[in-house]
Length: 328
Image (cartoon, rainbow, N blue to C red):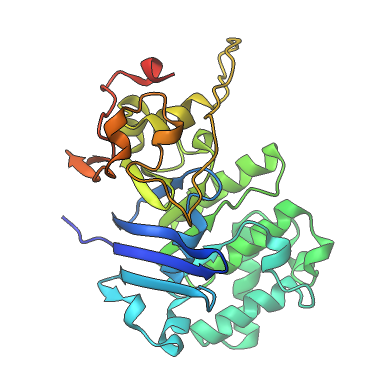
């Protein structure tokens, strides 16, 4: 069996604020195997984006981080910033939510791709331009020879996201982190971008972490799913196991909020209450104040993330294997 491409162990990230310490990522551990796509799912504020930035080492000064992030067995958290900059873009790349803010507005898109290739691959500017044209064509950019000299504001949102993907792919990294890459796009373009990412990852034999709040885009686009709540992974399994053998009520509630496509008029479920205050986290299970299956002892101690045959779940009273409908 091959070794994990990415190993995350006991990763914690907290932010010092005027109100106190915000524990945004709390003891997260997982493995990502080569060639696989892991979807990280959860509500806004669950810690997904902070987790991705913790992996990349892109944290603000008020952040306190601990734990291990190993890529190809190399602990990235132990590297000095100079060495880490060489890893970003070359070995691990990121596609952010809004390309209008992630792209430099005063540089043409071609120059931004060329700059990455010159720095990380040592190509000449002429060779880098040819490579940039090929990358733009591979991500479906219309008229790449014309668009390469455009500025970001001259492109549509979908085109800008294709540029961001081309930059991420430029150095052929082993791992791509796509942090809600379709948030600012309309539904039709969202599907095109997600299918593009899936195709590129498969063709280039890369691994991907796909961060999203929408369980509906996970099926067919990921191999494994990790569900986050209040900075912790509360359930992790293959896509098939998670959808068909849901064990945690929070995951069941997320699945119940997906609109049905069979035409049935079924009201969408909502999760009552609000996500917890991360400064004053509730005792016990963080989801218990909102969980309709909670029992008094759920508030006493946080459940461990137990592993049963590769299906990890953190719940004192996990749902039966066929309990998705019963959980609604």
